[in-house]
Length: 330
Image 1 (cartoon, rainbow, N blue to C red):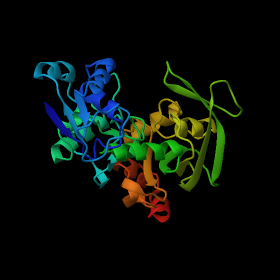
Image 2: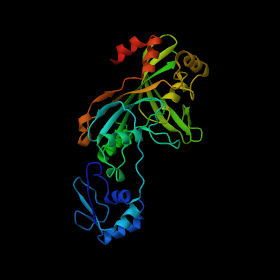
Image 3: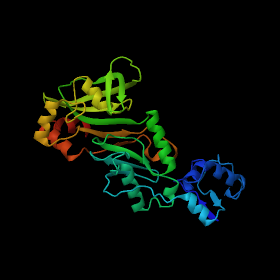
Image 4: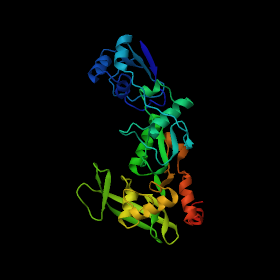
């Protein structure tokens, strides 16, 4: 007999979902059969599998060691180690200042992403155990492009992950970015349009009017300062589509500095030669949370800020935009 106690990293999920992670190689039919025969119990009683687990719930599994090993599998949660710039942490969540060049989530490249680094960090600090990783995997709740830096929120517990994901899905979190664009902009503007993604090319197209398979987008930008050649912008995402800021601004004739996919080739060549910039100069600067209760109450109505990378601050200094930055953002 094996016995498990539910902790806060596992609470809040359905019992059958928990069992499917614990015995990941077992067919669902087998799990429900074991529940019916009381070979798997919840708090000493027969269970159907649709119960919602709470902290302190006791699960008992009456299987032979061989059967348990056969169905539990041996796959470990992927993890990696690096120094993370952590802006905020509590028992349910993390806010991390992601550097440009780091993936937010795993892809097919095999290169570690922020998800693996968060897992490694939580294991290293003792916030999660190998045993807990069999039934709960920490993850990020908002995704930034690989070469976009800035704030990413990650869930440390199931409750934290679920509530954060709901906030981002419902667009109740304000997301502000900083970028430098080619051209001079002087007035705040609320842009609307439609975005269509080409999955094969991983590139989007912006339309002024509705198009088949195109999604509505809204982007608000506020000029912070200009040197007559480029402008430092604060951008607020109302919607959060793939490459939205980069493509939306480029469609208006104001491409981001360094953006190889949507930018101006000659402009990018000049800043690459001058600054060594090889990616879009875009930074997720601030997250502002609404009034909250429950496990996220500690971040209710708070704003969190991430300092831009050294190259970003160096470029705005050299482009004589540093004063505009400090006057408007500090």
